Length: 215
Image 1: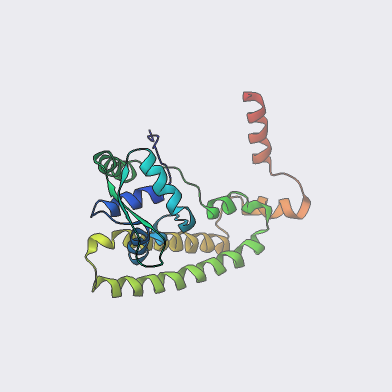
Image 2: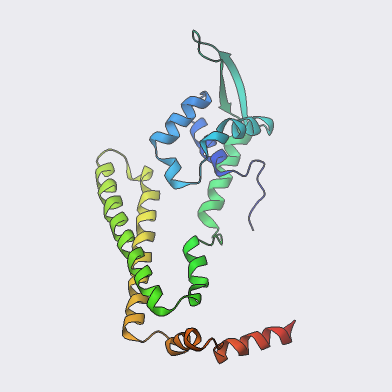
């Protein structure tokens, strides 16, 4: 079961893992996160950084240790992680690594309503997606190889995973395209007939009736 977090924004976890290194001000935290490409690994909105840091401070996960000003620059507050913040970061990381979460993607949403288009419309769309995936895979693979000479694998592991997921998706799309092209996709004739006649396939009518009966 997913645990309720005092500050649930994933940016909070990124901030805590950076703040564990040493006390620093928000601008430095953002610079480190950007340099590590964390905005590619999680949905980070940089405009909310200061709000997230204030919330972490409010909940006792970070604490302000000093404020200073250099010349005409705005005053900067330095924060350090508290013991509670350290425990929160560790516990949150354990949860993310151990507990699968159902997070539907936009592609899954598209697949769920794919039947609204004809097979002949779907095929070129999937080919276009496959071409884009292959281009991205090649670019990500090159970038990963370059980074391997600069960073330990520990700091690239999420990029390896992302690449593997892209490769798996590309393989699945190829398989689906082969079924559509070869005519082996189940109920392909019924799918075509639906768009030709407007009549709902019998299997869908049976499912609808079953659902109405069970309510």
